[in-house]
Amino acid sequence: MKKIIVKNIALEKFRTFNPWIYKNEIKKIPKDLKSGEIVEIYSQDKEFLGIGYANPLSKITLRVLSFFHKEVIDQKFFEETIRKAYEKRKKYIKSSNAFRVVHSEADNLSGLIIDYYNRYLSIQINTAGMENFRKEIVNAILKVIEPKGIYEKSDEKARKKEGLETEEKVIYGEIPDKIVIEENGVRFNVALKSSQKTGFYLDQRKNRKIVSDYVEEGFKVLDLFSNTGGFGIYTGKKGADFIKFVDISENAVFLIKENAELNNINNIQIEKNNVFHFLKYELETQNRYDLIILDPPSFAKTKHEKAGALKGFKYLILNSLKLLEKDGLLAVFSCSHHVDLDDLKKVSLSASKDTKIPVEILEHLFQDIDHPYVLNIPNSLYLKGFLIRKL
Ligand SMILES: C[S@@+](CC[C@H](N)C(=O)[O-])C[C@H]1O[C@@H](n2cnc3c(N)ncnc32)[C@H](O)[C@@H]1O
Image 1 (cartoon, protein in one colour):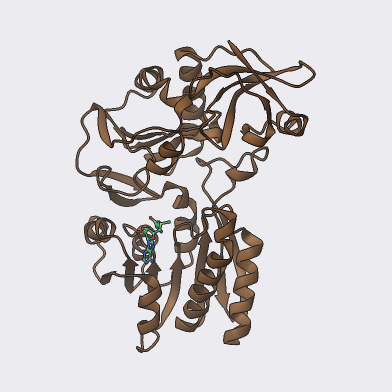
Image 2 (cartoon, rainbow, N blue to C red):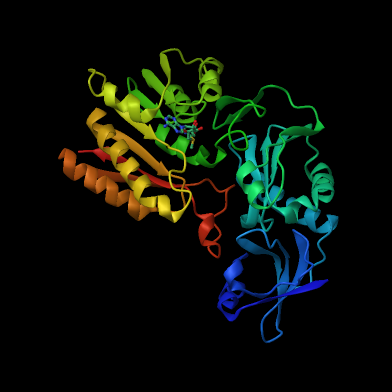
């Protein structure tokens, strides 16, 4: 097996079990290394540090799969690692038949994502290292999870960075056009073939429950960046009187009506629109709300985009505060690693100052536990937000 030597600045990552090693942290890469090849990792002092896979094309050049142990990376390794992750979800996720089974490095399988939707799976193989083990991964999944079908929805951008092509396709069994899942007694259609990301925003499951538990009879709700209606549909089940959904994606809004019907929710309005435009004219109407949800996509994919993202957040929060009734509630989320909870608090305070509307924080909100936050991997905490109340 080829050997890779890391610089001393990378040693702290090994001591803290943080698996991403960047190009500038590597001392020496073997010349004839193939993309994604399995390597032994050593320090400059020849200390054995672990086993991983390397890709010279990627900024994250080395991903560690085993620390300080000469693990053999074969089908057995994938079976054992996937089984461990699957058993953990079955133990902890009691409220749903849809959950993330493998969340990349947070489940010790950097570059692999597996979602479970009521016996069907959606998977992403996002790195050359994982691509090299495609056969072993699929075999391990079939053995451990025994799904009815597997649909591949690999992330095009991530694969491009690794020098890989992308194709969305059924890779095992059959995938129905719609799969009905249930979480916390609320039902949703998941259309794997036309949906975003890996199918459904499972990471918000816990927050949909926490936020909707605040709904009182007669509430008027505005679900912004609603996707297929996740938050809004929950609020309808909890007795909201009227729910307006806004999302820019045709495929997403298409499913909202069906999701409402699945849950016997009637009084809804759906707008396929850009939220930034929508807010401008909504303020000119008499429409006001008791609960607004702001769950935008990642506005800052790199740290250079952070300033623009914060400007966007301020605009959204400021106008949402104006659209709220007195004592109204606002749930706001950031799924970008570069915009953290403190950033969100700062822009919320600034929006509160500009609108002269004081606010209190009722809840701090994070990704659900099937998207583990591994303390050793700082990037693994990506979804955070809070529920605020207009005073
Ligand atoms: C994080 S997802 C929301 C998930 C949703 N809350 C749920 O529980 O399923 C973000 C959504 O924002 C939508 N989106 C992105 N940019 C938008 C824009 N400018 N206006 C409206 N929707 C937008 C995407 O189509 C996507 O559905």
